[in-house]
Length: 237
Image (cartoon, rainbow, N blue to C red; front, side, top):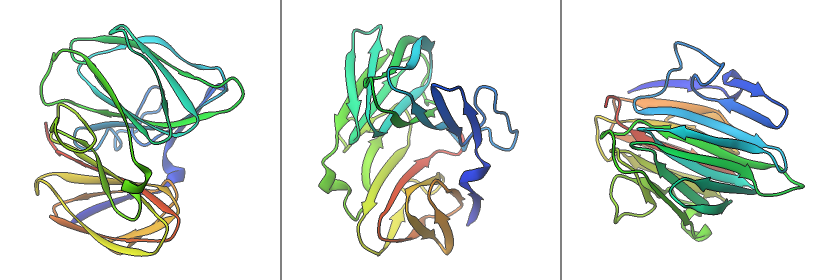
């Protein structure tokens, strides 16, 4: 097994006033040649957007874009005709494919919205753009790692054009659990949203992350009040 620990305070940071963003990987003006992504996981941004503000219409292509709201409401519009609001408990996916233009705004006029923006490089280029969102059952996340992203349209969660699986769990008790990789040649990037936990003996605090390669099973010791996002991805496309 090979692991790399990433402390929360070593992430890239950009504060634009209306946008306060922490970058796990090189993004925009933040560049670190050692942090260009993890396999096909290219972007993991931890964003806070001020009331009434947001990202004006802009374009993407050939990227799987996943948004996970953590607090507040995020308004989405795109040139596929979608106008939606995503909230804490929702998962949004957009396959940019041949090209899509969209905007994301804080739906509230008086409170901050917080969300994760994640980009995954697809295994197939120039697919037809698509959009989807789901609402999770809070009980599904309780004291287990629940699948929220997969390559399969009929699986739990949303699906993407890549052999990647994401799991999310919220723990209100101390737990010891194992995660078996779907594909032993994949790697895992575990991002702790809240609380504390141990991953094969390595202690993580809030917003710390750890990447793991060359293993088939991971052991997690979750502390009370912890919340974990686990992303299993191919290490090469």
